[in-house]
Length: 129
Image (cartoon, rainbow, N blue to C red; front, side, top):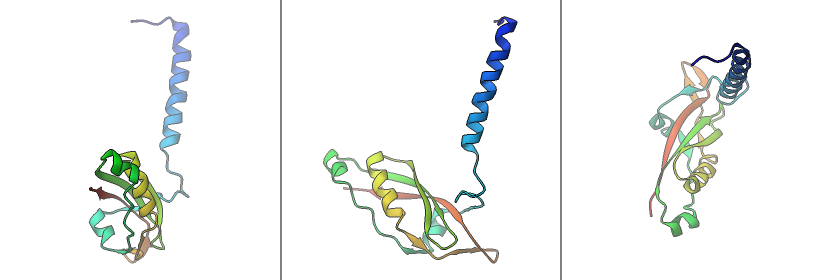
C-alpha cells in the first residue's frame, strides 16, 4: 500500500518522536542507583545478608487466598543498604509487602576485584498460607 507523499513526512516525524521518547525512558542516568551496578546471582547476594526481616503476609491476600512467589529487582548500594527495590513479577498485593520488607534488608558491602561495588539482582520471596 502506498501513502501519498504528503503523509510520509508526518508519519516519519511521529515515529522519530515516539522512538526518542522510548529510548529516553529506557536510558539509565549516570547518577542512578542502577548505574555501574554489577549483576550477581541471588544466591551470592543473599549469602552477604546481615539483616533480612520477613515480609508481613497481607491480610487481604490471606482472605482472598492469594499465594505465590514475588520477584523483586534489587540494587544494593556501596554501604550494603538496599537503594532500589521494585516488583518484577508476582501478585501486586504480595509484591507491596515484599518490596517493603526488602527495603529494610542490609548486606555486607560487596567487594569485587578489590573494589566496593553496587550490585543488582532479582530476589524471589515466597508467600505460602
